Image 1 (cartoon, rainbow, N blue to C red):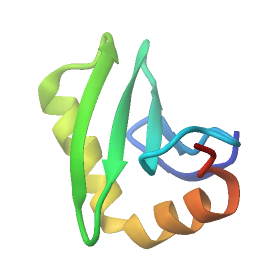
Image 2 (spheres, rainbow, N blue to C red):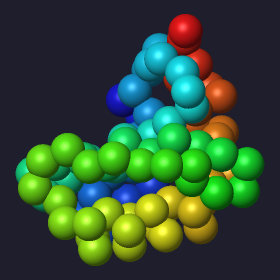
Image 3 (spheres, rainbow, N blue to C red):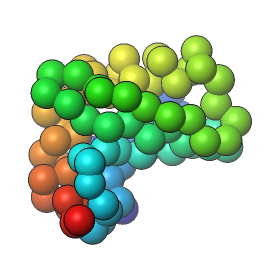
Image 4 (cartoon, rainbow, N blue to C red):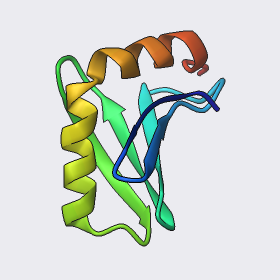
Length: 81
């Protein structure tokens, strides 16, 4: 599971061979956020575990700053239907 970014104690990663739609997992602190990638922004996201909505929103803001890296990682490792 390649990590393309770290922020606030969380790992931003793509699971190798993961299903579409293109998305990343932001993992840490007892949970994760799954964020679906769009053109220039995150289309939508969902929380699993012990992450507050406030923290999740901050993580999504961080992800949108490195969206090109997220797409590069998805294109290299994800994308299996």
